[in-house]
Amino acid sequence: MVEQSDRAPLLDWEEVPPAELAPSGPSPETGDSIQSGLSSYPTEGSVGVDISPNRSPARPNSVTAVPGESPQSPYKYSGPGGDASATDEEGDCAFHGLSVRDRRITGSGWEEKDQIVAVFVVTFDTRSGNMIEWCLPQDVNLDGVEFKSMASGSHRISSDFIYFRKGCYFGLACFANMPVESELERGARMKSVGILSPSYTLLYRYMHFLENQVRHQLQCPGQYSPLEAFYEDKKAVLPPGGNGLVTACPTSALGPIVNRCMHPEMKITHPAGCMSQFIRFFGEQIMVLWKFALLRKRILIFSPPPVGVVCYRVYCCCCLANVSIPGMGLTVPEFRPFFYINVADITALESELSYVACTTEKIFEEKKELYDVYIDNQNVKTHRESLQPLLRLNSADREKYRKLCEQRQMLLYSQEVDGDCTSNEEELFILFFMEQNNRIFQTLSELAASADPTLTAEHVRAMGLDPQADRGFLVDLLEIYGIDVMLVIDNPCCPQCCLGELM
Figure 1 (cartoon, rainbow, N blue to C red):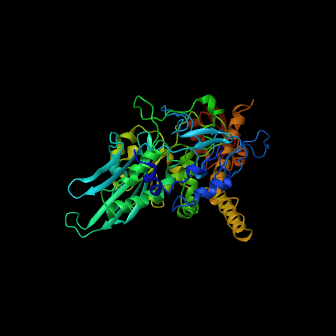
Figure 2: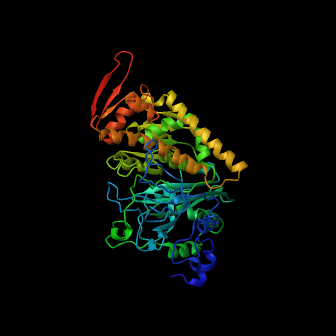
Figure 3: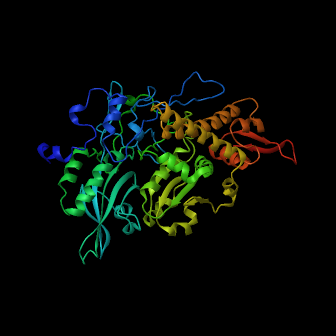
């Protein structure tokens, strides 16, 4: 056990000094000020979801950006790392990573606590390749982490960071490459320092610490005292039985559980401008990715190192599928983030029905049975014939993209001219697609519950879709989500062509 006197100087980066913890959760202003010094990747305001019972018929399920804490939520969103995941199909515990130690109920909601289950150092050995040099706890299963935390091709770059998944855990590792005058090391010393947690929503807090530690390990190999102190201070309390899941708080203590589709566990903190970079990088192709995400397809993004920015593209892709209508999407495959993957993940991917991931290994392009959509640079493609029509942009897609760019320009103008800092591009991006998705599913749900469940061209236009060009997309959407409506589309051959009832 590391003594307190040793821990203090080593953990001066800590996000919430123990002396500052109040009986109730901090105010949004306090939370923002605390987070501002955590990482070299600053956060912006969080997004809360407000589903008002008094909805306007024109805009069902209105979504409101709320900084800090949402009054409807039984727990606090911790900045852009807020996690609203409920129990999923594979039996993961509700609110991934929750434990009595990890979160505690306060007068104002849930307070996020630390939940690190492992810390490790990976090194590249010229004879053995990637290998785990050191870890705590010593009996933790880290098989494969040595390849996940040091991406293939990293020897060509000086530094990187990587989000990845290891079983039911998520990891963040910082990599660095330092030239050395050593024939044994062939002129370069490469290491990664990383952590594992049941949730990726808090990993960003430790980015700066990991960056400092990997540089420390390169310059002073074998000095693990800061990492030992970090683990002792942040380690999660795992339940007996060794099932790898952190104990969840009693449901009665949680209060009403937030629908996992309301605000998916897809929130990780990113550098300022991540969303705008994503929009500039893909342009109108975002609308193509949006449809694939909503249909829960398997999306794989290829890019050479560095892979950190590509992990953020994984995040942005998942934001496209947000839905805030309670109960909607519970029967469809969860859009699971894998972040960085390599050949060691092939077996795990074979059983996945829906995911988004990135890789630096070109060999994945040949393994077409593992993915539905493959993205190489800005080139989005699919080998599945049934999905080929979705690659073509239509007039409705371009109109939605135009509105997104218009709203973004208005936001930037208000920030520059009026000094309005109440909103940011992340909120705009997430809410834009959430409202679009809500409009579609609200219309379909109301039709399915009506006496005449007939989806006409007028309904389709009202949802922001093209009655002709988006017909195949709608057919797949109705089938995947199990929405029982009759799709009727006008066409030149048959003014009222009934395409059948979809269960």
